[in-house]
Image 1 (tube, helix red, strand yellow):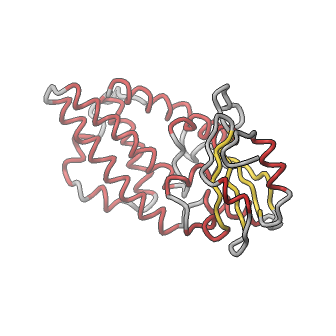
Image 2: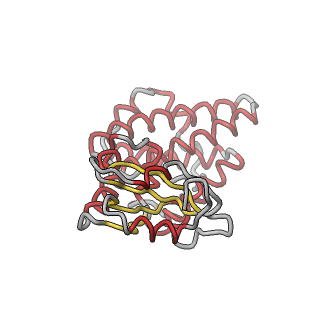
Length: 251
């Protein structure tokens, strides 16, 4: 087997297991999400090697084929020094294939799955402000007859909303592909998964202003309960535009 030759996931795992420099193998992506595998799904595999080790497997770094994508990292890099932020959700739901650290690899994945309290608090404030901003723009544009702009701002607001809701629970937001999968298996406390997903779907599709306002009422309560009232209060009377206007509005 050479770096240029195509090879299968099973064959590579068999090879990696025989190399003592390999401390862990971690599978991410669709193969790590039950029920998400399609005929087009490949295997995305992290190969974690000892910090001071020399291994021939390093030659496979960056290998990509129809069946197998490889990333070779040192243990220090895998702990965080070399991992991009956007990989956090992938690692949070990744599957351990090999763990020579007696649970140490699994422990690192658990750390990736839970945001630090200060980080989560800071991020939640940023996402809350961004959500309110896009929602406000959407409602204003709808009021002024700018249909396309209103709908695009509504779509933007859903991105920020999801970032916010997951940050409030110290969890990385799932990629869009896995949103339903994640919420179905790991609901956000205090939120009805079906109601939330329907609201996100309808708002993204049509920019329904009444629904946006009703959803904001729920978000405002959750944000204030979590200690982010100052972010909302900074909007002053502008909040009145994005709060429910009619008694009949419903999510």
